[in-house]
Structures are given as C-alpha cells and as structure tokens.
Length: 107
Image (cartoon, rainbow, N blue to C red; front, side):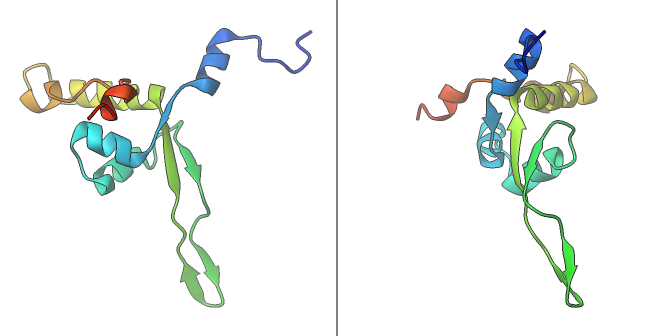
C-alpha cells in the first residue's frame, strides 16, 4: 500500500528534476529564443503553461505559452541533434553540454 506517495525513485527524480526556460537554453546554446521555442514547442514532456488560440466574437485571440523544459527533455533533444549531423560535424560537437545550470549564471 502506497498511501498516495511516490514509491518509484525514477518517478520521484523526474518530478523534481531541474526545468529550464527558453531564454536559458537560448543563452547556453547561443541560439535565438524563437529558434529554441520552435525546437521544443511540440516536444513530448515539455510543460506548456497558457491557453491556446481561440475564437472570441468572430476574432481569433492568440495566447502565448510559457515553456518549461525538463533537463531530461533537453538532454534528449541535444543527443538527437548531435547524432543527426554525425560525429564529424563541428556544429553538433560544439553544442555545450546541458545540465550545468550554475555555469550559466557564473558570469
């Protein structure tokens, strides 16, 4: 009997793993915020906070989402990008390793 507590350590780690903002990833990877937003917008596991575009009185009201990217998703996308271009690619090999949040704020 679990009494509603999380008993799986992997599940517990996922719930408390660090989450990154779009601007933090953009700064780490030296990309624009728009590029990062496009890369992670439809990625499974990304938290989307906000409301979708909807029709209000014959006009569409566009709402923006705030994205929070879990570290596991960040690493998955980074791994996929590095393997997409191959081992000989200078661009993929030059991506900084994610997961070093304190390095981002060290300057």
